[in-house]
Image (cartoon, rainbow, N blue to C red; front, side, top):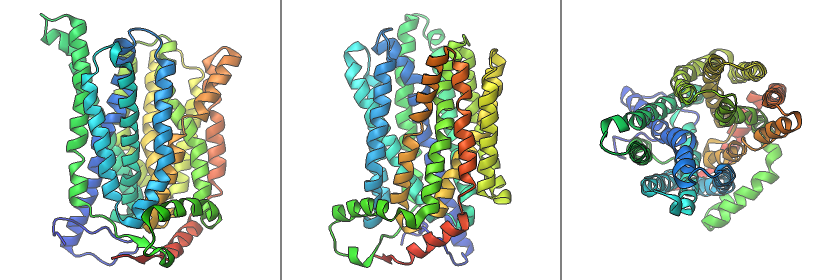
Length: 455
């Protein structure tokens, strides 16, 4: 074995030598650096730059909302539907990193190609590249998440997952800050060129920078984290990999009662994450409707990135002290208060204050949710189950935004739409109390013992 690479560990681990401990820490660092790299796609491409570029330079002022909405939905749907089957195949073949590398390449190359989008003649190409990029981004995260139970002990999952989210917020926020500076300072640095041309060029360079950032910071995870060993049931040995992949996918539905705590938590996550996802995706457009300035909106987005990082770490430590269930419950109570106070939001400083409150719990709630799934699933089937988890993640902006839109339409005020999100957080808090973590862990460990390691 290459001495520079740490072998992923099983959930129950023997004591490590100082050298092994050093390599393990390097593997964890390498894993978190991927969050640092790929989060730039979420901030610059998905949230800040590409949507504005598409509306301003590709659609030339025409309504971009319907088309963009379909692009987001299609990309998320493809990733969601394919993830569980691909995850099952990756577990069986021992190819989590191979699949991850494929999706990283898909995302990086499509993002790099966005530099060449220059006008309305590229409307279709923009949509295609965004969909492909979204599939690459989301697909890579399935297999990235699936490595978590193999690089950290069970009692380290919360801390490592939280550190990953923290690194993602810092990395994504740092590049976004650089990109925003490029766009605003570009016209001053090139005074002899029309300002609009310079702004467009800087936005194109910003999108290209995401591809470079993503690719470079993906290298450590492939270098220092070794592929987890493949495991299979005895009856699967020698079977066709595609057959096994689909077989596991369909059997997972049939055996869902076996993992009832995991299944219940995923359903619970789907409920409360619809509230979280709606706040994240609709905040900017609601702020715009209230007449808040672009500086306030972008400034709040940047603030959230950097404030969320230390609070993600804090929530990881809180979970160690209070337990995962209580920690998530606390975050949902804060979200419930945010949705309630959001009803009264009328001034720009209110937007900043609520943004700060969101930053306090956004990373922590997601990180602890991810690590709890890792604890409740069989480690040897991590890609398969994180594939299912990703389905719930991808659909976390379906029901919430729809409810907000319907309530806003019926009442004529988005204030009622915002406060309607309280339903998701209240239901999530109640449902979460019925998750029995100890029982779920025992079931997962028993399932792991049924699988044999393949050479």
